[in-house]
Image (cartoon, rainbow, N blue to C red; front, side, top):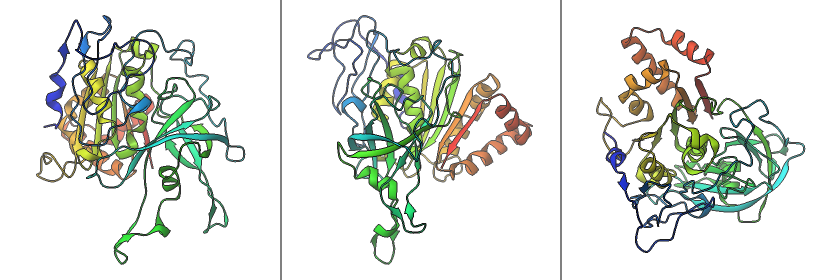
Length: 381
């Protein structure tokens, strides 16, 4: 059913070394290239990470796959770590934004992906702290010709944990797709209709200054007071951003949340094809290291198996394949998250209505119950 489902069972147990590789230890991140192998693991690590087949572009450096290593990463934690009473919002506002700097901009999709998506790391000097699930605002330069005033804030879900990909608490990572418009008359992209902020970000260079606001939002925060919780995360395209931060916190860093986590993190991601997968190499590493705590299901609309009706496999079709398990998890207190284009939600809700009808449930009543219990989290744009 799933392109990568067979990988779920691949966990190679090694007690010793993988020849020729460097030792893995310490709190600093370990990065993996397309053909890299994990080196000698510490005795605390029971499994080795084999090569990861991947058809997209590799996200490397500090933004590449990482494992916790030894030591603790806890200098930005609340006390206790799950206490959200002091989560801040709007530290920087549009009238007085924080001036950050671009660290890096890297294309993160393969040549056959529709469009261009970039992994963008920004230095905020530790002055704009955030929690996983929050967003930053970006103020692009220039004047809005329709309003004859400066462009307003564009919000972007944060794709890194509070520690940033370098784990020093001073950076944030955004996952941005360049918004373009194909003109059938010009037979080319029309620069007059391109997305102002996404193109500004994707064209940015290291050390460029950038105006930031936020952080904003609390609806997508993680309920870490329950270490046995099940996270069901549903994303399309760059909606992967908050869930990448979730998975990195749970499986890629030596945080108290990750060390205490005994539940399940289940990610559904919908993209066009394998080249359009985002952070796949990183997710495959986490899956191999945590086969009992993570599940990964992709819906590739232009590749792979069709849905049950023989049509293209969209995100709602993939979730429907596991509807019994999803509803069972929700009945047991799971939290379900959605992030991506707002056009994903009608299909999701229609699918859930059909499942509810088959189970003899009233959809509106069922959804209302989930919302009242804080189990339903939606951030679409």
